[in-house]
Amino acid sequence: MAHITREQVQHLAHLARLELTDEETAHYTDQLSAIVEAVERVSEVAADDIPPTSHPVPMTNVFREDVARPGLDRADVQAGAPSWEDDRFRVPRILDED
Amino acid sequence: MSVTSEADLVRQDAATLSSALSAGDITSVELTQACLNRISAVDGTIHAFLHVDTDAALATAQDVDRRRAAGEELGRLAGVPLALKDVLTMRGVPTTCGSRILEGWRPPYDSTIVERLRAADVVILGKTNMDEFAMGSSTEHSGYGPTRNPWDVERIPGGSGGGSAAALAAFEAPLAIGTDTGGSIRQPASVTGTVGVKPTYGAVSRYGLVALASSLDQAGPCARSVMDAALLHEVIAGYDPRDSTSINAPVPDVVAGAGNGDIRGMRIGLVRELSGEGYQPGVRESFDKAVAMLTDLGAEVVEVSCPHFDYALGAYYLILPSEASSNLARFDGMRYGLRAGDNGEASVEEVMSRTREVGFGAEVKRRIMLGTYALSSGYYDAYYGQAQKVRTLIARDFAAAFETVDVLVSPTTPTTAFTIGEKVDDPLAMYLNDIATIPVNLAGNCAMSVPIGLAREDDLPVGLQIMAPAQTDDRLYRVGAALEQALLDKRGHALIEEVPAL
Image 1 (cartoon, each protein chain N blue to C red):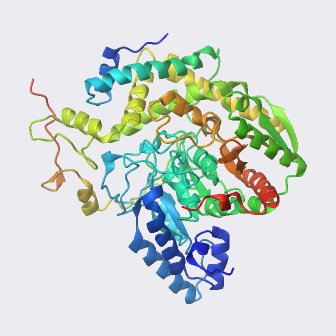
Image 2 (image 1 turned 45 degrees about the vertical axis):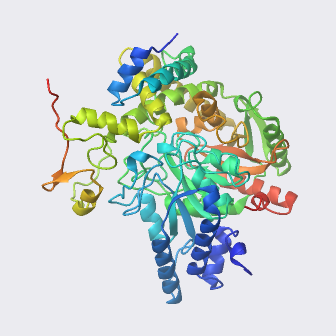
Image 3 (image 1 turned 30 degrees about the horizontal axis):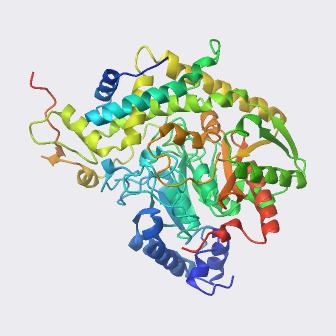
């Protein structure tokens, strides 16, 4: 059923923020098609009336006491940052040219 | 214990070392130094470690020795060295998850597991190699090169926790921590002749465990004996309010289970769907012999069917990539880790895409795209939605089976360790390694792999998987201890003693 096209892989890579090379795109097009073909067997199971499981141990409304806890050490966080300026994370511009 | 040399010392199990430490026969500094020397001697070949924390390990050992000498009451594993999988954060110590995208990152906090290990005065030797972000079954997908199997250095040690398993089998550490999302503790244990346990989901806190698939991930103990695994299990398990999926209930008495080993009258089920075609003859043969041993030990062995297990692999490779694609979105090059292409001109989106392209390896990219596909509109119901329903059916298969039996058993893996490079660019062949281990992760119950012998055709270790209902982890240890003892009686020594000299 499912055959994944080169265009689909490019679109998926964009959605996932992966800047793939042409070679990678071609390789993944073949591999993802094969994998999807193998896993789509799950649709053979008639399961219309079966509830989905998202989590093995269902729990809801897990709260903790509303008490302040120490946060991360600022100097440690700064040391791990790829770029830091004026006591903040420095990030690239967030708007595109156009 | 009479220890004549360092070489002898590093081969002892943790329970023996623990007794020797408390009796004052050895010091933790001597033991830690012996492990560090062993690492220096063999890790150039094995490559189990990504980082060795020499100074801190010796400082911890020194502190334990001082407090013990002062008469302080210490925990059972105080002063015993351990290897930590590099997917768990440890404050100030490099944590890469086997990925170049986190190269050089030093976490600003400890995971709960590390906190508990520190509180128990366990000596953490360093961080072990793994498939990148725990995606893989061979440790070949590490961004830092593969780990080698001490039984045959041309072969894989399993994955994703190949580093932890190899560290045990190479006698670099008596204990290790692994994490298991689809088999990453049990499969490496199986192919290295060691013991690995995936506890019940929620038993061990995930706080500080870098997430792969949050509804499947579970950390657990790795060791060279069933009792050692139980001692470590006891230290790391327990309720943690910082993990909202943590089980707020007493931990089953796993140490008592490991000390029991009496399986008379126990009902054990063979899973029909986890045998036969696709399983290497030598694996089947060892498994059949082990099952005969279980019968000899007084267990009642019956065959059971779990029909939906045939669909587990498909469901897993839809659910896991879906969760992973979402979890790994945090690696965007903004707050920590690698940033690439930030030339002052490029936009945040371009920098993000560039960073992820150069920072992630092939398998991670494959699974992120697969997950993105499975979750995309138009496909969601057919793939992710349907996989979640299959997950329900697998949990029901387990529930039905556990109505009639106490535990289930199967071979842990379809084959023994394969050669490095054999399956590295064949994802479907690689995924099949986890065919027997995946159902437990989907249902959230617990399982153990215990060594049962060497396969006839290649003299490589074979593991048997024991599966038990959620929150009955002690049963795994009971059955594991029984098999371990029977095998010991038969061979006259532990299987791990047969690892060739490096």
